[in-house]
Length: 317
Figure 1: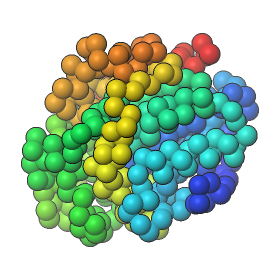
Figure 2: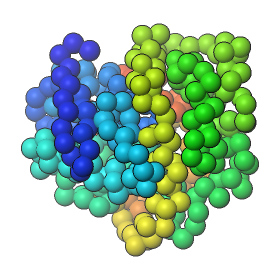
Figure 3: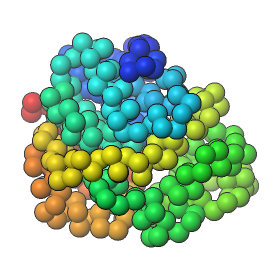
Figure 4: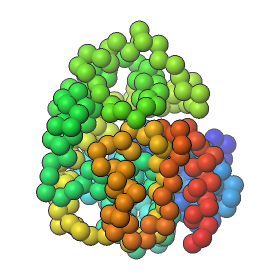
């Protein structure tokens, strides 16, 4: 990561760490679970070389950014507030935004709440309104669809999943998450994490042992509660977002997803993405790309392709 600078800035009541490289128009990269700023390492280097200022924070609860103790400090309003304050602290009026997984959820809401701060959006893997259909409880719905072992439901009881995760080294756990390459739901039966070492899950070819160890080193220090708390606020988020029922995201947007992504196979998602409703919700949606053979971690698994998709879109603005 030659030339990448690291900074910490006070935003929205927390200290936020971010990595940065390059000069020019700013691109803000938002990561997902269980990731860090580091998941954008390929795009940071490549797009900085193309004349952009690339900025990737550790979001609230992750890595070298503060992790507030209260679970209620992890609503989308808190996270978007952090991002808006970071944009301000960086001296930017507008930025390009690229999000993946939870970072995509935060990016959608950023564009809904503060479209004035976003030039254009490239979102990966998680479509708009995937979890936030006002009036319903997304966690209960997902439990009914996938059962009690579905990971988002397993994440709900404070401390429970953290205790299970702590039974193995974070490097083993990271490899377990990153190695998933099928479109089926992520199920975590009780007791299954402790058996991971004996399973000898192969490391994905697109990530090195050093990369996995970087992630693991941070989670050894922080634990997982900060990242898991995002899921614990999903139902409350849905309630609070009811005021935006029917509101549109009015930011020029490109959406990219892998055809083996577990989110692509969730009930109704393909119909939503390829039907009329996605375009109604995001009227400036310019492009939808489905990468054949790609799974959930596309910004790392298909790094060069994702970099090209980002560059070929934002260069228009």
